[in-house]
Image (tube, rainbow, N blue to C red):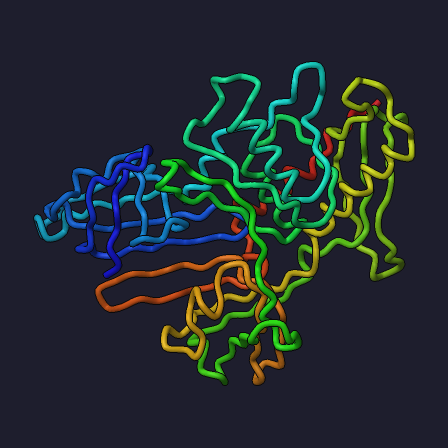
Length: 381
């Protein structure tokens, strides 16, 4: 079993545990991962599994979680069944404790530049060097900005900071994480680029996951148009007939599937409260429309259990965020796609890896949130 180190938030080592029942640790490229630990209460050092403490997998400074929850049940089997269930989030989830509060005198917190620059600007504004010092998270610092990713313009107003980073990550393809620096005794926020390991590139050795190549034990595949939309009406500020509405999309006739996108939060003023030129406002609305339409793309979900004795070595030949080729000759499926989620499973019976390739299948909560985001708040007159 992989040892688990228990740390204080200040990175003082409390103890190391390697005698537990099971551990699931989920890493996510765009979103925030989580973990779930089961351990018998009567084993050594379980009293240190307290909310707020950190767990670190072995010496992996990028596999760290914050304990948020624990529970225990005792049944007729007595001590043998008295297991703690300890749950938490990946360390990067700490940024979800902040929202994007606009600076004084402005309706939005605005940023533009490379996607990495924008992400780090928001982290700096709301956790590292916020205007209100009471919002500062002392342990968190920024890695240097390398200005990676596509150029974007972003504005945010009272939105969850983690949600905003997830959206920028999906739009740019960049990943983000928070890892430990024991020399500085700090938590480091940084942005990452995945490698292209697909079969048709020549820069890196390709990685092909396929049952035929004995690299996948299990593969599930779903493609669906139920959520597909390809033409959007984007409504900005104003009411009734005075509300500004623009469109995005080219589809016509039977192939055209329309949706309404509420963009009332997009400001028509700059940081000095001066009105923006109409063409800039329209460009911002259309950019929002393209972002939202990407959430309604044709759905293609791939999930698989990777063989631990496959020809490819985890974290060497491939890792979270890399773009690989998935192939099932029998199903006629070949797809180049990013590894967006990896679940590491540690049990007495052995170690397993479950991966999600591309967008993960939406949960009920995610579907409801997506539907609520489309409620326009249109005022009828």
